[in-house]
Amino acid sequence: MLILAAAISGPARAEPDIAQTQDIFETEKVKLVVETLADGLDYPWSIEPLPDGSILIAERSGKLKILRDGKLTQIKGAPPVWAKAQGGLLDIALSNNFAKDGLLFFTATQDYDGGIGTVVIRAKLSGNGGWLSGVKTIFRSARPDPVDHSFGSRIAVAPDNSLFVTIGDQAREKLAQDTFDHRGTVIRINADGSIPADNPFRDGLAGLPEIWTYGHRNPQGITFDSADGTLYTVEHGAKGGDEINRPEPGKNYGWPVISFGTDYNDKPIGLGTQAPGMEQPLHYWDPSIAPSSILVYRGEMFPEWQGDFLVSALKFETISRLTRNAEGKIVSEERLLTERYGRIRDLKEAADGSLLAVTDDDNGLLIRISRMEEPFSAAHIEP
Image (cartoon, rainbow, N blue to C red; front, side, top):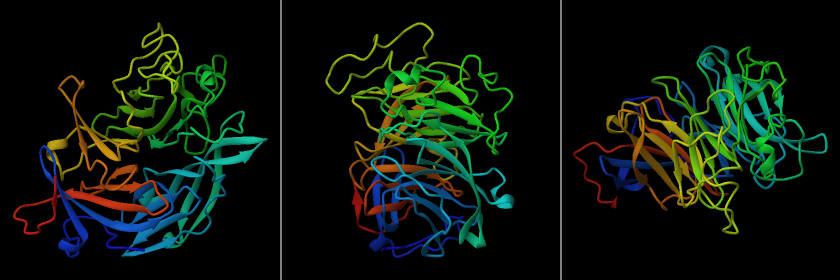
């Protein structure tokens, strides 16, 4: 296993021999330096930079690892998961007070009640990152099912410390319109698993009290814009119709009644692209890019990208950078690193404004994307 660097903490970071360990890429506004920090990862699904500059990595097989001071080690006490097909250990998120409380949140698939369902787990990172303690399941999706794919699933921690979690439709498309089923939804729970008082179906009369929005297909990205607190998701369509949405409480985002894509047999989906009472996406892709995560860039390293969406993608092995105008409308797209490193599964902004990404493979990579500062003497420059 190649391990080149671990700390992503700021300007004092020592650089390795750039000619041997880094690639340079031209983009519309800036040149990028891409370093491989580690390889040999087993289908990494998510990453999370920690305040001390180390990096947590969740592998879909169920292993949780930490890259610190140039060493990759496995954290003991990870929760058991159902790790087959598209299931396993999925997303990681940090508590807003992680530096003090050490709390982590995970999504995973587990086998219970005769089927496979999505769960949310809380734990504390203890022993200087050596093990998890206090592991507790705080949410289980209703009516688990034998279907082994389209689980979602990502977590965004809100400023009020509540958790927004995406859950895929598990290939049970019609259930995404059922507000008494968790499939095809964004849910919102408190950090202890209780239900926030202002959830749209809090009383349970019109839907499950955890549900925030419904009518989603397979949302694999969720994020808050740190500038204004707006929540965004990105989700897989079928053959086309991947979407960026702005989930607002109680609203219906249309799947499978409306879609901007077609089914895999090229037949139309549902009623078309619009229907009363169903929300329109902020943006859609056709053909599909198979989006896997989303963030709104607010770092200092790339001022040219302020407020842009960065969406990692599996199909074209790329990062889609989407620019917005003053009204927030998406007006242009640039694709970065296309078909250079593999299927990009997760993308995070580090404390110094650089980007961290992992690739979806049995020899998965952890890479760091930073700005190339002039002058620069290395000859390896990619178009």
